[in-house]
Amino acid sequence: MSKLKSTTRIPKNLDDLAKKTEEEKGEEEIHHVEETFGSDSFTPEQLTQVWNDFAESRKAEGKNSEHMVMKQEFYLKDPTTIVIKFLNPVKIDILDRFRPALLKHLKRKLNNGKISLETELIEAQSQRMIYTNQEKFAYLTEKKPILRDLQNRLGLDTDF
Image 1: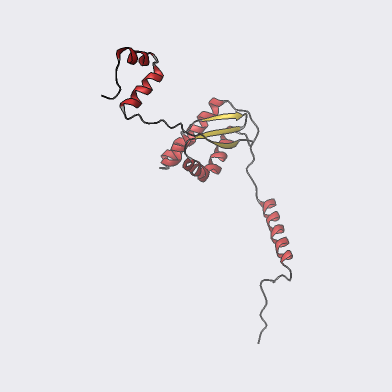
Image 2: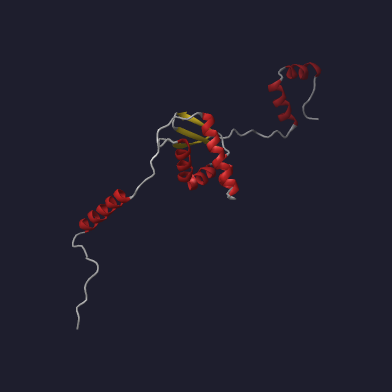
């Protein structure tokens, strides 16, 4: 009867197992070659052009939700930090799905590896709907205070 060889070695200590996986990760990182980018400066116009190119490529691929996210307002916080303004947190989740591809595209096209992307959630100002005659009159008197004086002089009632 032949003796079977063990293909895996069971570690005696869990720390040995953790150390081994860390060493393997380190070796993978050494062998993994990353694309490097320069540190060229860019203008807001160049950024807008590259941004719009990426947005149109998403639209051409049929990824309309990503295209919609790309059409949000954005600005440069500092020379390499791009901030996108959102009114809806759902759009941030959509951005997170393709953020790595967007960053890689921006870094490659603008030749700047320091580019980062931030999001800013803006609260939309809710406007109260005006329904009743009193509410309508109150709104108009805020705009034109002279209406209150006219109401008093003429003895008008807002409820008719």
